[in-house]
Length: 168
Image 1 (tube, rainbow, N blue to C red):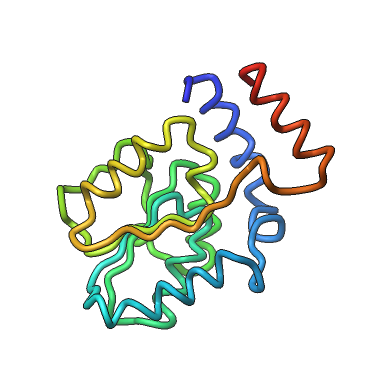
Image 2 (cartoon, rainbow, N blue to C red):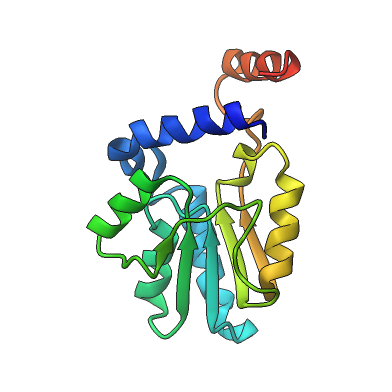
């Protein structure tokens, strides 16, 4: 992603951080379903550590901690304001840290499993993020994402395609 696009995106999330959970988290939504599935395979895969990429306010971290308290769970999130909300919700600064999906600052194979929930569609070079996830994962990666062009009404989908076609 070009730096100006990245700055605009991060500024948006910084400015809307106080509304992030209200606008983006739906306990009945697809990402909670995916979280339930992830927790369901943790024992089967003998997972002892998880890195959540693009943690936002820490939804996945908190969920996994609640369901599987013996697992080491860390999340990376580049937007300080979103991390601050996670800290207010009880996450520690060792659990929710500064980080970028396209340059994960952990060693090769440092975590058993890496996951992301609704992040890749925000990253222009998502293949770089997936390669980083594969590098840091010892056993598996888990991706729950959506097709940004397939969501919303027909008019909004067309608008998104037009915006993409002109390079914005």
